[in-house]
Length: 263
Image 1 (cartoon, rainbow, N blue to C red):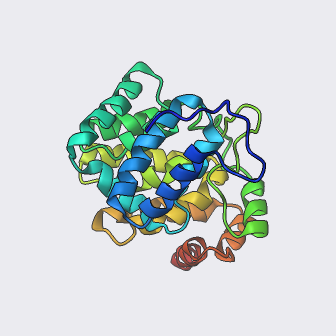
Image 2 (image 1 turned 60 degrees about the vertical axis):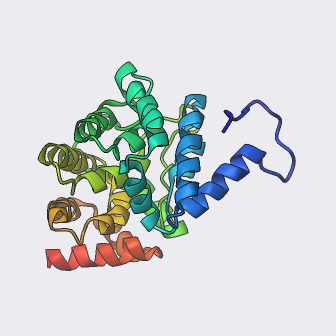
């Protein structure tokens, strides 16, 4: 794949060909197509230096079907021959500080547990990954508004349009997957990251709830369930109610179950 030319003027009513192809690869990748997953990973790695954060978040948003995150996770962890060069690029960006959302996500799925842990640490330290410290739980007004109008929260809804900074909730599915990691150190780092986000800023809560089914059925996923149960216990009542009524079943049903657990 050649790097996309992001300076080309848009064609009215048409997507640039490279973007149309990348979106098509994403749709097939979400259903586990191995060739599409390969093309998607390579295309996203090439796209990352463009700095188009919102576009990257849209492309990484496997909202439907949710299993797309599991397919991507399994695919990246396999040791394909072509894959080594791509993962070297991702690892290099983590080391030299040029990593962005694509590298954080892919490194968080790396076959090497040490790289996965570095990715979690980078997500916590990166300027796009966290907001400023909050006094207790944020009000959740923005999250409630999005849920009430659309039924779900997109993973780029809270980015500032001019600076593209803010809560980068696209990272939450990766943090959730790693919260059930088989390596103790990776799992501990991811659980700490999950807990900090959902207890400090309610805007992360909808995506965390949406991501919970990725690990809820695993023995190692019990701790993530406990973290979200704790977050629900202190979340604003209006946000809890809106989450339970969300159109997206991955949010509504999971929220209802968490509320039942609270009694």
